[in-house]
Image (cartoon, rainbow, N blue to C red; front, side):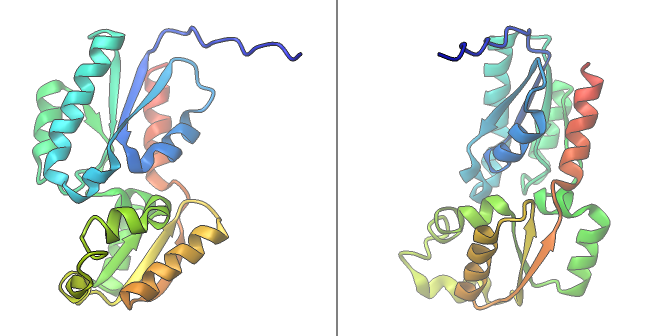
Length: 209
Protein backbone atom coordinates (compact mmCIF):
# COMPACT_ATOMS: atom_id res chain seq x y z
CA UNK A 1 0.00 0.00 0.00
CA UNK A 2 1.25 3.52 -0.74
CA UNK A 3 2.24 5.57 2.29
CA UNK A 4 -0.37 7.97 3.65
CA UNK A 5 0.11 11.62 2.82
CA UNK A 6 1.78 13.59 5.57
CA UNK A 7 -0.63 16.23 6.92
CA UNK A 8 0.44 19.85 6.53
CA UNK A 9 1.29 21.03 10.05
CA UNK A 10 2.79 24.36 8.94
CA UNK A 11 1.31 27.22 11.02
CA UNK A 12 -1.06 29.37 9.01
CA UNK A 13 0.60 32.67 8.12
CA UNK A 14 -1.81 33.95 5.48
CA UNK A 15 -5.53 33.46 4.94
CA UNK A 16 -7.07 34.61 1.68
CA UNK A 17 -10.78 35.29 2.05
CA UNK A 18 -12.36 35.30 -1.37
CA UNK A 19 -15.60 35.20 -3.26
CA UNK A 20 -16.70 31.64 -3.91
CA UNK A 21 -16.70 32.53 -7.59
CA UNK A 22 -12.90 32.67 -7.38
CA UNK A 23 -12.45 29.50 -5.31
CA UNK A 24 -11.01 27.29 -8.07
CA UNK A 25 -8.60 29.98 -9.17
CA UNK A 26 -7.49 30.82 -5.63
CA UNK A 27 -6.91 27.17 -4.77
CA UNK A 28 -4.88 26.74 -7.95
CA UNK A 29 -2.77 29.83 -7.26
CA UNK A 30 -2.04 28.75 -3.67
CA UNK A 31 -1.68 24.99 -4.20
CA UNK A 32 1.29 23.52 -2.39
CA UNK A 33 2.30 26.74 -0.63
CA UNK A 34 2.79 25.98 3.08
CA UNK A 35 1.00 28.17 5.59
CA UNK A 36 -1.45 29.68 3.10
CA UNK A 37 -5.16 28.96 3.40
CA UNK A 38 -8.19 29.95 1.33
CA UNK A 39 -11.61 30.67 2.85
CA UNK A 40 -14.61 31.22 0.59
CA UNK A 41 -17.69 33.41 0.91
CA UNK A 42 -20.94 32.33 -0.73
CA UNK A 43 -20.74 33.09 -4.46
CA UNK A 44 -24.50 33.67 -4.62
CA UNK A 45 -23.89 37.06 -3.04
CA UNK A 46 -22.82 38.04 -6.55
CA UNK A 47 -26.56 38.75 -6.92
CA UNK A 48 -26.85 40.54 -3.53
CA UNK A 49 -23.69 42.66 -3.37
CA UNK A 50 -24.83 44.86 -0.48
CA UNK A 51 -24.56 41.78 1.75
CA UNK A 52 -20.93 41.11 0.83
CA UNK A 53 -19.31 43.39 3.42
CA UNK A 54 -21.18 41.73 6.30
CA UNK A 55 -20.38 38.27 4.94
CA UNK A 56 -16.68 39.12 4.69
CA UNK A 57 -16.74 40.56 8.22
CA UNK A 58 -18.28 37.34 9.54
CA UNK A 59 -15.63 35.27 7.77
CA UNK A 60 -12.84 37.46 9.18
CA UNK A 61 -14.15 36.79 12.69
CA UNK A 62 -14.13 33.04 12.04
CA UNK A 63 -10.58 33.16 10.65
CA UNK A 64 -9.26 35.17 13.59
CA UNK A 65 -10.93 32.87 16.07
CA UNK A 66 -9.42 29.84 14.34
CA UNK A 67 -5.93 31.13 13.54
CA UNK A 68 -5.36 33.95 16.01
CA UNK A 69 -5.92 37.68 15.88
CA UNK A 70 -2.50 38.33 14.33
CA UNK A 71 -2.87 36.08 11.28
CA UNK A 72 -2.45 37.99 8.04
CA UNK A 73 -5.66 38.24 6.01
CA UNK A 74 -6.04 39.30 2.39
CA UNK A 75 -9.46 39.79 0.81
CA UNK A 76 -9.88 38.46 -2.72
CA UNK A 77 -12.74 40.70 -3.73
CA UNK A 78 -12.94 43.81 -5.83
CA UNK A 79 -15.63 46.32 -4.84
CA UNK A 80 -18.11 43.97 -6.57
CA UNK A 81 -21.07 46.34 -6.34
CA UNK A 82 -20.82 46.90 -2.58
CA UNK A 83 -21.04 50.69 -3.10
CA UNK A 84 -18.00 51.25 -0.89
CA UNK A 85 -19.30 49.32 2.12
CA UNK A 86 -16.63 46.63 1.73
CA UNK A 87 -13.85 49.22 1.54
CA UNK A 88 -15.20 51.02 4.60
CA UNK A 89 -15.11 47.77 6.60
CA UNK A 90 -11.63 46.84 5.36
CA UNK A 91 -10.27 50.28 6.23
CA UNK A 92 -11.58 49.94 9.78
CA UNK A 93 -9.92 46.53 10.10
CA UNK A 94 -6.68 47.46 8.36
CA UNK A 95 -7.18 44.85 5.64
CA UNK A 96 -6.39 44.95 1.94
CA UNK A 97 -8.27 43.69 -1.10
CA UNK A 98 -7.62 43.28 -4.81
CA UNK A 99 -7.77 46.58 -6.65
CA UNK A 100 -10.62 47.12 -9.09
CA UNK A 101 -14.35 47.46 -9.36
CA UNK A 102 -15.14 43.81 -10.12
CA UNK A 103 -13.60 40.52 -11.19
CA UNK A 104 -14.11 41.32 -14.87
CA UNK A 105 -11.71 44.21 -14.50
CA UNK A 106 -8.97 42.33 -12.69
CA UNK A 107 -9.23 39.32 -14.99
CA UNK A 108 -9.08 41.40 -18.18
CA UNK A 109 -6.76 44.07 -16.76
CA UNK A 110 -8.00 47.61 -16.15
CA UNK A 111 -6.87 49.05 -19.50
CA UNK A 112 -8.22 46.12 -21.52
CA UNK A 113 -11.53 46.20 -19.65
CA UNK A 114 -11.88 49.93 -20.26
CA UNK A 115 -11.28 49.27 -23.95
CA UNK A 116 -14.00 46.61 -23.98
CA UNK A 117 -16.43 49.02 -22.39
CA UNK A 118 -15.42 51.72 -24.87
CA UNK A 119 -16.13 49.35 -27.75
CA UNK A 120 -19.60 48.47 -26.50
CA UNK A 121 -21.11 49.79 -23.28
CA UNK A 122 -23.92 47.26 -23.53
CA UNK A 123 -21.70 44.26 -22.75
CA UNK A 124 -22.60 41.43 -20.41
CA UNK A 125 -19.62 39.49 -19.06
CA UNK A 126 -19.07 35.90 -18.06
CA UNK A 127 -16.07 34.31 -16.34
CA UNK A 128 -15.31 30.59 -16.11
CA UNK A 129 -17.35 30.44 -12.92
CA UNK A 130 -20.35 32.26 -14.40
CA UNK A 131 -20.22 30.19 -17.56
CA UNK A 132 -20.28 27.08 -15.38
CA UNK A 133 -23.03 28.41 -13.09
CA UNK A 134 -25.06 30.47 -15.58
CA UNK A 135 -28.31 28.63 -14.92
CA UNK A 136 -28.11 28.75 -11.12
CA UNK A 137 -26.55 32.18 -10.60
CA UNK A 138 -27.93 34.25 -13.50
CA UNK A 139 -31.10 32.54 -14.72
CA UNK A 140 -32.44 31.28 -11.38
CA UNK A 141 -30.87 34.18 -9.46
CA UNK A 142 -32.81 36.70 -11.55
CA UNK A 143 -35.95 34.56 -11.55
CA UNK A 144 -35.85 34.09 -15.33
CA UNK A 145 -36.59 30.39 -14.98
CA UNK A 146 -39.91 31.32 -13.39
CA UNK A 147 -40.59 34.56 -15.23
CA UNK A 148 -38.97 34.52 -18.67
CA UNK A 149 -41.00 37.58 -19.59
CA UNK A 150 -38.54 39.58 -17.48
CA UNK A 151 -35.71 38.89 -19.94
CA UNK A 152 -36.15 42.17 -21.88
CA UNK A 153 -36.18 44.17 -18.66
CA UNK A 154 -32.84 42.73 -17.54
CA UNK A 155 -31.05 42.35 -20.86
CA UNK A 156 -32.82 44.62 -23.32
CA UNK A 157 -30.01 47.17 -23.27
CA UNK A 158 -27.21 44.65 -23.82
CA UNK A 159 -25.78 43.98 -27.26
CA UNK A 160 -23.07 41.39 -26.71
CA UNK A 161 -21.79 38.80 -24.25
CA UNK A 162 -18.04 38.65 -23.70
CA UNK A 163 -16.67 35.50 -22.11
CA UNK A 164 -13.47 36.34 -20.23
CA UNK A 165 -11.88 32.89 -20.20
CA UNK A 166 -9.51 31.89 -17.42
CA UNK A 167 -8.90 28.46 -18.98
CA UNK A 168 -8.96 26.90 -22.43
CA UNK A 169 -11.98 24.69 -21.86
CA UNK A 170 -14.15 23.90 -24.92
CA UNK A 171 -17.07 22.86 -22.71
CA UNK A 172 -17.11 26.20 -20.89
CA UNK A 173 -16.82 28.04 -24.20
CA UNK A 174 -19.83 26.10 -25.46
CA UNK A 175 -21.75 26.98 -22.29
CA UNK A 176 -20.87 30.64 -22.64
CA UNK A 177 -21.95 30.65 -26.28
CA UNK A 178 -25.23 28.97 -25.32
CA UNK A 179 -25.76 31.64 -22.66
CA UNK A 180 -25.27 34.35 -25.28
CA UNK A 181 -27.77 32.62 -27.56
CA UNK A 182 -30.28 32.35 -24.74
CA UNK A 183 -29.95 36.06 -23.99
CA UNK A 184 -30.07 36.99 -27.66
CA UNK A 185 -26.61 38.59 -27.59
CA UNK A 186 -23.62 38.49 -29.91
CA UNK A 187 -20.85 36.27 -28.54
CA UNK A 188 -17.16 37.00 -28.08
CA UNK A 189 -14.46 35.09 -26.23
CA UNK A 190 -11.36 36.74 -24.80
CA UNK A 191 -8.52 34.76 -23.23
CA UNK A 192 -7.49 36.47 -19.99
CA UNK A 193 -6.01 33.70 -17.85
CA UNK A 194 -5.99 34.77 -14.20
CA UNK A 195 -4.96 38.32 -15.06
CA UNK A 196 -4.35 40.67 -12.14
CA UNK A 197 -5.76 38.08 -9.73
CA UNK A 198 -2.57 36.06 -10.13
CA UNK A 199 -0.38 39.13 -9.72
CA UNK A 200 -2.19 40.20 -6.55
CA UNK A 201 -2.07 36.75 -4.95
CA UNK A 202 1.61 36.25 -5.80
CA UNK A 203 2.42 39.66 -4.34
CA UNK A 204 0.60 39.07 -1.06
CA UNK A 205 2.10 35.58 -0.66
CA UNK A 206 5.59 37.01 -1.17
CA UNK A 207 4.85 39.70 1.41
CA UNK A 208 3.72 37.12 3.95
CA UNK A 209 6.86 34.99 3.58
